[in-house]
Every structure is written in structure tokens, then in C-alpha cells.
Length: 340
Image 1 (cartoon, helix red, strand yellow):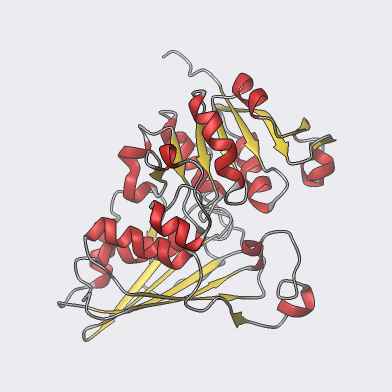
Image 2 (spheres, rainbow, N blue to C red):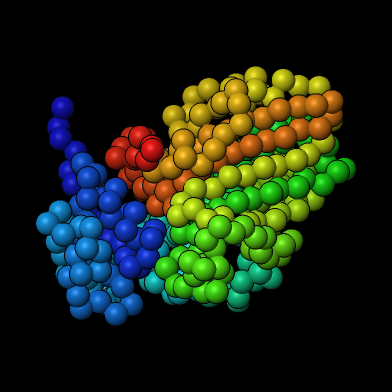
């Protein structure tokens, strides 16, 4: 068999938590070759930015420049804030470079995006973007040049809810109680993420106003044709990583929820169905989503968990890149948890 040629990839936005997680996967990837690493400022060695990579992988961190990327890379990961990401993406896409965008810039329909974020500057490519949840859009992702990597909360919420969309009574609201480790807030410190603010503490934030709420609602609507009333409440917990989702809804018929889950995900490598409630430690450090569900009468409880900066961001981005490049989706993805 003819060996597969190396594929040059780049990363813009290497300084954050998603950036380091992407690099950890890409450095060990058998096909992807890290050919370009950039931040907004550049000008330093990578191990100065991420000391954990010292003597493992060395390169010069560049100041992000789209013209350089076009010459060096076939695919680029954008680990940038919303609005900034679309500014880079449109030029790269027009030059034939494939893009996996980890921001929100291409995740939503135009009206929904502009209501919750900002005016969109790249409507042309927005209409071409594919939502990068492999279990939902795998075959379309394979043909796409632009994949919008889902948010962490929507990833865990949607994977828990999608198997039940035909069985949920849409006349009643869905309540989602979400809890995430502090790494989901990024590197920049704030009163709520400062040690004295989060240590031995837990609190809700952005109640019924988090930007991931419309993302969950939109994807459920597009999948089912139903308008679900999503009520999303996130919480910050004193953990570095991990995310736990508790979803509550009413059913329109009697079902065996574990049987539904097992049938829906029977061919999925990175969804595991549990007979008991899940936790964040069991999938921490992996690309797995762990799910449990239980029914009482017409009431359904769905419990799902992911690593918020891997399955909820970086490892899922690599899964999407694998698919876009005609590779095995599972290539180089982490599957052994950080236990203990």
C-alpha cells in the first residue's frame, strides 16, 4: 500500500488552553505535520510559550500572517475569539486552505449569530460552513472546506439529547443544568476564575442568557424540525477540566432510555453509554462523551459528560480535520482518561 503523504497544518491562536491541547495531539499525529504556529504577537520560541513542550517539539511562534499560512499549510485550526476568527478564515478559504474554526463565527445561522454576537463579516462562507459534530454531520464534514467546531456545552448537551428528539414532548420546556471546569473560561483571570473566587465554590452564571443556549436550540431544530424551548443554566465548578450536563424533559411516549441510547450510538467510537450516572473524571483527558439516562413515568433525565477542552474543543477539532482530509476519524485522538 502506498504510504499516505504528510499534510501540513497550522494553528493560529496557540497561546490558550485549546491551543496547547491541539499541539499535544498534532505533535503525535502520524499524518499531520505542524508547519505553522502563530499568536497575535509571535516572536518567541514555542517552549517559552508552553514550557511543557520543551525538548519535545520546537518551533518559532509567528505573528499571525495569512499570506504565510497560504504558502505553508493545507489546513489551519483557528483557536481565536469570535469576530477575529472570521477575519482570518475568509482569506484562507478563498486561497484553498481548509479551516477548522474553534470560535463561534460559523456555528450559527446568520440571524441567530448576529443577535447573540456581532455583525457577520463573511456571509459567503457562513453559508458554506458545516457544524462539526461528527455524530450529527459526519458525511458532510468529509466534503467540507470549513468546519465550525461546536462549543463545549452544546457538544455534551446535544449528544445527550439528539437520540431522544422523536420522543420528547415539544410542548414542555427542556431544562439543562450544566457544570464546567474553570479552563472553559480561558487563561485570562477574572474575579470569578481567580483562585479565591472559585476554590471551594460553585455558582451559576449567565442564567438563561448564555450564548450556547441558542446554539443548542438551533441544532435540535435543524435535526428534528421541532421548536424546543431550551432553558440553559451553566455553573462554574472548582475543577480544572471536565463538564457535566443534567438535562430534564417530558416524553411523549414510554421508552427504555438506555436502549434508545445504545441503538443510536451503536456504531460510534467516542460515545459511551453507562448504566449509572456519569462523572467528569472518567472521560477527562479523552475524546469520549459519556452518557446515562433514566425515565420515571413521562419524565426523562439525561446525564452527559465530556472533557470541555478536548471533546468540547481541541480533540473534536482534530476529529473534524481527519474527516476533512480523508483520514480515519479516530487518528491520534486521546482515549485514555487522566485517572486518578
